[in-house]
Each structure stands twice: as structure tokens, then as C-alpha cells.
Length: 422
Ligand code: ATP
Ligand code: MG
Image 1 (cartoon, helix red, strand yellow):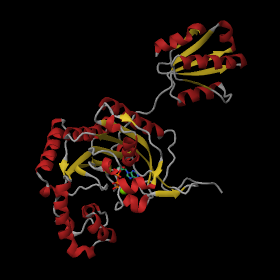
Image 2 (spheres, rainbow, N blue to C red):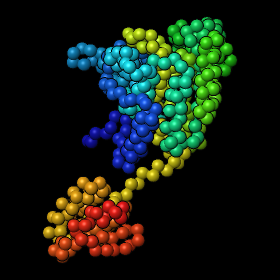
Image 3 (cartoon, protein in one colour):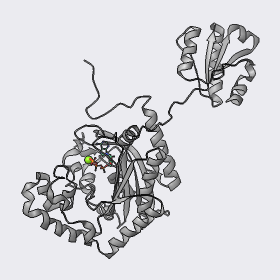
Image 4 (tube, rainbow, N blue to C red):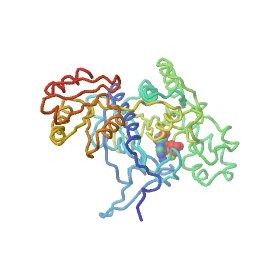
């Protein structure tokens, strides 16, 4: 019996992988412009890291982590997200002391969550995320949001909706928290068991519950916006002004709360509003997490970031039918006839490639016609035919596939000719 891939994972095959490369390439290119630098952290970490940073009351920690004990009896966990590791590394390497501040980082890599697999939800998925640590200026919040929007737009997505909210600071949150408890507590028995836990531990996250989202108490719940103190309100107003200044359109959703326990002030999500898109429409989520660095053992440091998955990015591109123009053609396909010519092809092909040309040849001893077919399949711009006779005369036959035009070229000028034609 053959073995299949594990549930919730996928093989990304040639033909599809080019989309991944295009998105990852664009993400790197934009990060370079915005001066975010790549960080690579381990795929697994001490379980404790996620308990402390993601938070014990979150879905991730309660039901989604791939946790195992290694042969040395340590509890390790495959990373379910990227912020925890980034902040751990920031503290471990004392980046708060770096000359360049704020510290602006990005990561791309696989994350693991034990979820119920469905469209847009995998057990292994790839996230691109950024973190800006060390600034509490709403301009950096605006920069982080606009970087995500720029990435989506430059890849060709148009049907996007940016939703922002403010969770306020500690003071605002505790006033809001009290109001939430008063609102939900009398009827908490009508809610799921998770929410019944949340009412004590983190009532804000009741608003994020997927099971009870249609309960009548949800829409009438006290909104954090009405509990913001002056500082938090001004912060949020500044952010909105900056977004407007950058022509980033957004809507404010007072019920938007994000999973992490440490989020404060800015929270945002980017959704696809494309008709063809499935039930899960959130492409990107992010927010501010002042307090997390301290919790991880570092000095008090403000931070903000986002994460998005490439899987949902691609799903959105497909829903909007964005043509990613991935069909890269080959510059030249070498066809040989006869043993001496075939041998010579090894040297010739190597020469083409070392001069930066994209070239291919036949490796299956195919007949002339089949070699031409192979050239067509690769969308070769030029086909070069070399027979033993041509080889003896030091020439090669070059055919322009677009015009059908043929010419004989001196072998020693072949590469230069091809380069100039290209
Ligand atoms: P959801 O509400 O869809 O479960 P989340 O709040 O768990 O999302 P985050 O932890 O904020 O998601 O992760 C940020 C982004 O990563 C999401 O907006 C989504 O694009 C992507 N993502 C999260 N979980 C998965 C998954 N299992 N498969 C693919 N992409 C995912
Ligand atoms: Mg989730």
C-alpha cells in the first residue's frame, strides 16, 4: 500500500509553486523597500514559549498545538505562529539595544496547527509576517498595515476590505472588561463552554467566538471604542488619519478583537470580498502588542505586526482570477542530429547557460519531430538545430519560433548572436 500525505497538508508541485515564489519574492522585495529584515527562527520551540506569549485561553494553545516530548524529556511544540519566536529571539539577542530602532523584522515559513482541515485551513501552512518593535508611534501602525495592503495590491488583488479597531490600553481595557462581564454574565449559560471559561479569564475574546457569533448579546455588547481613554482615542484617530493620508481605505469594526491575549490599541484584519471566495475570508490579521516583550523577559517595549498565509493569498488570487503571468518561456532549445552533434550539445548548452540564457536540450534520444514538439511545449523563443554536417562546417541552424525565420550562424558566434536577438 502506498503512503499518502498527512491530513491537512499539501504538496506544492511545479506549476503551482511558481505562485508561491512570486508572492514570497514580492514580499521580500517590499520588505526591502520598507527596511524590514528577515529573521529565521527554529520550527520548534519550548512549549512554554507559546503558553506564555500566545496565551492559555486562546484556541491555538487550547486545541491546536503540535506538542511532543523529545528524547531528552523536554516539551517542545511545532510553532503555530511567528510572533512568539520573533519576540523570544528579540529578547534573547537583546535587539532592544541595537543602534537601529525600531527593530523591523519579517519572516516567511511553515506554521503548524491541529485544525479541522477545510478550504483555506491547513495543518501546515506558510505565513509571511512582519514585526516592528520599539516604537509606539501610530505612524508605524499605519506603515505595518500599508505594507500588507501594498503586497496584496501589487500582486493584483483589488477586492479587499481592511477592518481596523482599537483595543485601547490597559486602563481602557479594564473598564471595558467590566462592562463585558456585566453584559454577558447573567446569560452566560446560553453560550458555549469556551465562552463560559472566557467570561472569567478573558471576556473580550467572547466577541471572537465562532460558535456564538450570532447570539443576540453579541451585537449589543459594549464596544471598546466607547471605553477608550483620551490617549487611546487620540492614538486611534492618528492611525486613521495616517491611513487616509496614504489612500488606504478602511472601515472601523468595534467588534474586531484578535486572538492573542496581549493585543492592545490597533487591531486589524484584511478580508477578501471577492464573490468567488469561500467561507473563510480573512487573509491577514495583525495588531499591537505592547507588553509582550516584557512578558518574555525583556524591557518594556511596544510592538506591532501582522501575519498572513500564502495559502489564503493564493485562494484570493484565484477567486479574483488574477493572471499571474507565470509562463516563463525558454530562450533556446537545442536540437541535435547524429552522435557527434549530440555530444557537442553538452558543451554548447553549458555555454548558453553560463551566458545567462535559459536553455534546454533533448535527453531521451527523440526523433527530430519529437524534439521540435518538446521545444514548442517549453515555448522556446529559438530552436537551434545542429547536425553532424553543420558541426563539421562550424555552423548551426537557428530558427526564430515566432516568425519562422531561419538563418545559419557560425558556431563560434552562436551565443553572441542569440544574446543579441534576445
Ligand atoms: P482564523 O480565524 O481563520 O482561524 P486566526 O485568527 O487563527 O485565523 P492568525 O493566527 O491571526 O489566524 O493568523 C494570521 C493569518 O494566517 C490568518 O489571517 C490566515 O490568513 C492565516 N491562517 C491562520 N490559520 C491558518 C490555517 N490553518 N491555514 C491557512 N492559513 C491560516
Ligand atoms: Mg485560527
